[in-house]
Image 1 (tube, helix red, strand yellow):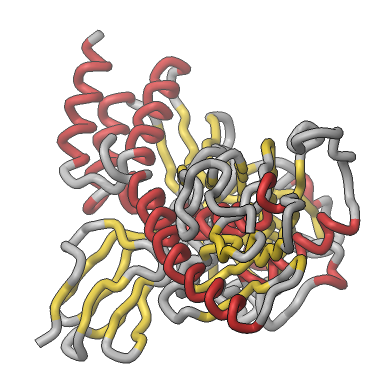
Image 2: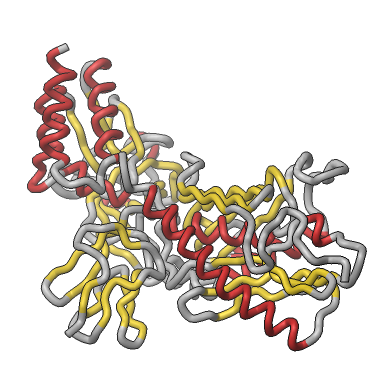
Length: 229
Length: 234
């Protein structure tokens, strides 16, 4: 019978033996070396039946199909745009994916998206060499006007959104801001200047304490206190 | 036979005091601090990010790029002339080669992971301290790596085999001195760096490596502890 050497939801670091014996199976963030299962990146241990995996805590964004992300236009191409997606790779938004409307060939593309503007887009293709294609056709995919953009860790995004969006709706209700969280770690916030600041502070707090459990309740208390003041 | 006791009173197989910390540079994707005695190393990792010029890109896997730098005031005497020099270039290269066996960059083709190692204060063993810090910073950056890399210097002073030589021992003039920086992957005992200055016999070398392996495992534990401490408490 195999045994676990670390408790569930503990932090595992590279090279650390998580489990011994052939009963357990290595999942994401782990590998098998003979009888042992060893972590190969920093993360929270998660035991799912027989499968041992780690939930990453740190790391750069790696593009994945169907992710809704916030990106910045940094180049205008002959028939499309090149966008920064907060990753090692840049993405291309092609003309036919940019809008439901017909865009004539040779039109001035900066009229649609100009340099340094932010958009919400969805990834439709990722090649083996991590070339990324985006689309703007879909619900909620649009250009972002006003507000401000902050950067958070990619792997903290699930915590910021919370289970079924519980955390993010908490922030939205308390501050009255409009918030969009991109999977790539860009967050767009728009509202009253003071409330915007509170929303940013809250998100930073979540980011810092993302490895804790019972965070939603803690954030709720924190927001209640701040809003009453 | 005049060298009977170490200058700072350590045992022959004892390293200097070690202090480790992770996440010291906020803007970096991963960072670490490693102090061994009076030698201090900071490492910052940026990436994976786009690599330019494109001629340096590798479409099969990501590139690891290390940069070792001693600060101008870091030596124990003269000002260290800043900028590229033969020594720093070589140490950057061996650091890179000692870290590559553990880091898996197949997931980020055409990209680069930059590692910057800065030494504000040195008292021998700086390349080892740099490798230790760099390996912690790489783990902190969330890169896939099968294990940490720990490094320490072993060697001989006169007729004694010692671990972790400081500058006074390295420049000992009463007898032969050998300084052997060793980097190892602790779980597999795979040696990823082995260099030597000075002279040593075959048997002594074997003994030095065995002694170093023991210290290296202790250092690896301290590296892991620092990574865990980042999330503990608070």
